Image (cartoon, rainbow over all chains, first blue to last red; front, side):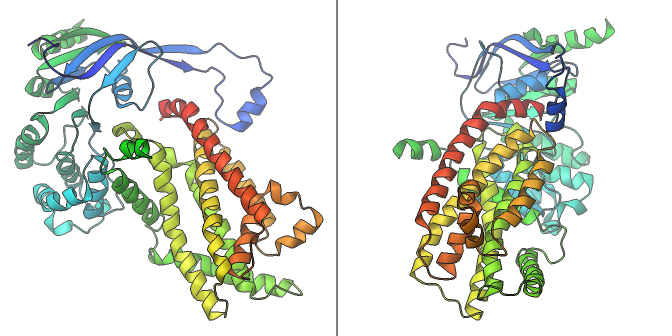
Length: 251
Length: 261
């Protein structure tokens, strides 16, 4: 099936992003006052992304891999619209996009109940919908006896399970999973969560997975993009891309 | 109108999200307090009794119902001070929302002001109970108070936006704002009649809108008098202009702050 036949969820055309790092970094009004007469040093330009192009079709699960500082997070931030790309690039997204990261939005001072309502509304659920799935979330996380206990008293595993259970109900057309996996409970929960993930997240949604875990990329993705120094090195089948990425460490 | 509604309606849980953030924001102020939300009520009452005692001792003559008089001034001023002080760090506090979902970033400020209004509700209820006990009853002129309150909300909203944006560039804006809040506290006729300033420097009411806001609040709620319409309209106009300016200011510069998050 060609890209023309399928609906495109995300179009990224010629996206570049440069950050200007000021040498006379002004952090306060005091700095501003003292630096106003000083000769300005030249700013340092850092190119985080350079001429990035790709399309993601509806229903695809695409992995994005690369070393730390390669531009993955900048790309996700641009797709999310939380930062702007340089002029000239075009980014088009279709449908509602959510980024899921482990630990996002969990307020330690709130109870599980409040966190479910807060995070549920963040991931696109109405209060009515949250009410209907509330017991499922609690039951799946195994927190029946701690519903009204502040999360700060939970163990690390309990927090991760709560977060995962809420995230599995995200209502969005496109889901960005940013280092979302890992550390979610014991073996039983891992098995349970894997099934849940396939059912609730992978089915029918467009997914972008950013991870340093090559096994996750190969397990879930149908396509993979390898980014290095802000440029796409290869956009192909995960097996091929992962091999190339791993070889880069040997070189 | 339909254009605005069509923008709002497709995202069905938008208002619920704003409401939930506001609720959490309100509660977060009292997390580490054993008295919990009750502290929202006790704190202003404690301050009022303190100021009342001190100023009653220091001043030869005080206005009638001096405790309520102070209460009305503090009600307005504390709401403004708290909303703007907390507004400075709002973007940092809610960065997980900005980074993880696509939404209108102004919703953060709407939720912030809503959270402040939740706290204000406790104070205004206490104020009315206190007024009734002191024999001060609401008259027809209290109907002007909603206009004053809208003006106050617009000031809280717009200045929170401006300060949150500036905080992205100047990390010491908080200290400067603390100074201005302190100056405003003593220059907004909270403990004395606004007339005392207006007699000597009538122009000051146009420099410090809170002088007029507090004066008009007292006229409407305490003395059942008509507000000073010039100051009422002037303050509302300034608040609207400031809100428009804050909107453009945030749109123009917010992306630079978001890059630094």
